[in-house]
Image (spheres, helix red, strand yellow):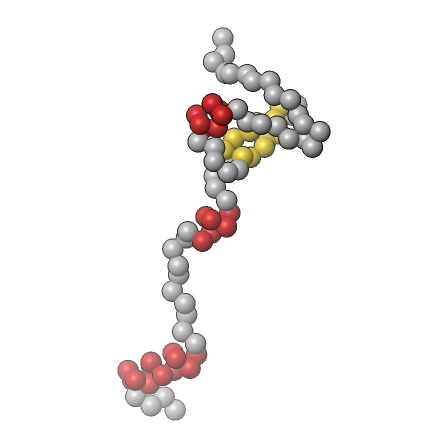
Length: 82
C-alpha cells in the first residue's frame, strides 16, 4: 500500500490552484514551486530558489585589472617596461 497523500483542489477560472497549507509547511514551500510533467502525471515540488537570489548570493570573483593598471603594477615591480 502506498504512503502517498492525495488532496483534491479545484482549479479557478484563471487556472490557479491553492497548495494546501499543511503541504506547504511540510515541504517548506515559501515562494515558488516547480511543475514537472511525467506522461499523464504532474509533480509539484518546491523550487530550489529563485534564480536571481541564487545568482546574487554567489561569492564575488576578483575583477581583472585594466591593462593600464597591470602595466603600472609591472613597472612598479620590475622597472620601466619599454
